[in-house]
Image 1: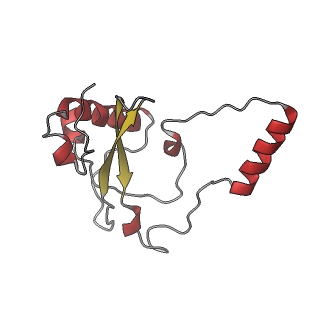
Image 2 (image 1 turned 30 degrees about the vertical axis):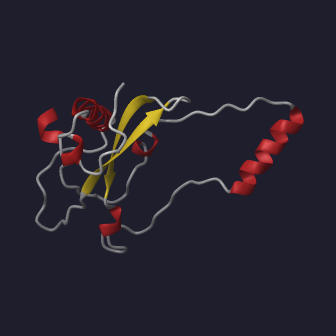
Amino acid sequence: MAATEEVPRTYAEATTRQDQDEWKKAIASELKSLIVNKTWKLVPKPAHQRPIGCRWVFALKRDEKGQVVRYKARLVAKGYSQRLGIDYEETYSPVAYLNSVRAMLAKCSAEGMEIEQCDVDTAFLYGKLEEEIYMELPEGLRELL
């Protein structure tokens, strides 16, 4: 795969450059994952709600030789625009303490155990929200539908 070294910073940039076909595939793949996982449903915006924005974040995945092996597009909500007590009540992010990870690695090493790593592509799509959150339509969704 040939790629421009610079990763695009915006949807407009990603969809108008030399390697736009690869970025468009990555965008479509992300949108399809969001749709298949029923992350949202399209509804008219209620008058009393203020939708939060969203934006695209792009990355290139490379092999050990530095060659591009995957174009990655991730849609992120601009959660920083939400207001505590109005748009949500609390936040939570399950993160392991570094000391816990070190203890587990030490125990595995002492016991001669093998350690495997995995990644869940759409891990953050499985959480359930108590509040109704409205988000603006992401760029590229209309073209996909």
